[in-house]
Image 1: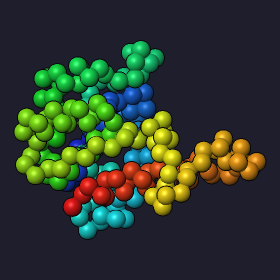
Image 2: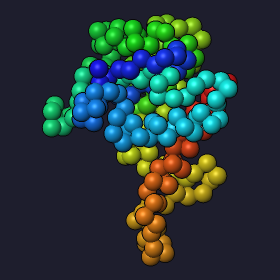
Image 3: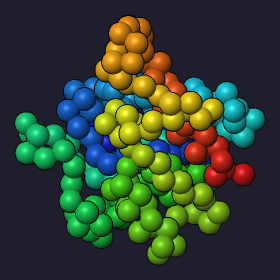
Image 4: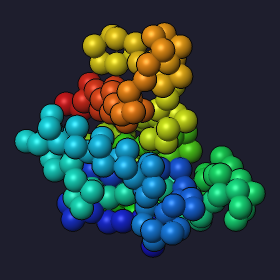
Length: 192
């Protein structure tokens, strides 16, 4: 199933918007660039919260607010409408996929946050589970982060070239890591 992967533990779930072309090709959720960014984010979280829970792809549950594959060449769009995500049929499916999660559900993107909030607001999640909303882990959303966790500016490759006429071939990857550290700290600051 390219929209859902049950973790071996029931502590953490990540909910994304919907599977796309990369997920369809890999036949698993959070593939492609989003999957790479998720892997890096889990590594950062594991270094801070190893004693609380295991932050590995195998341990966590990964699902999507919308189970159908969406990408421009296939459906003419990149995600479902808010109305589609909030249908009772879709929410019931998501509820079933999240019903064993005990500690935290992390919603990556607007559609994920809306769907999980709809479940939380109608008491359809386990008691005590914490819901955290973060930005989507795709580059378009991450690239909006302009300052690292130390308050230093994060310059894009183009900005760095303009500033001093040079660029590091690894700068893009380094910038993504800095931005994922910001997202990790947003999560860390909300967890107990």
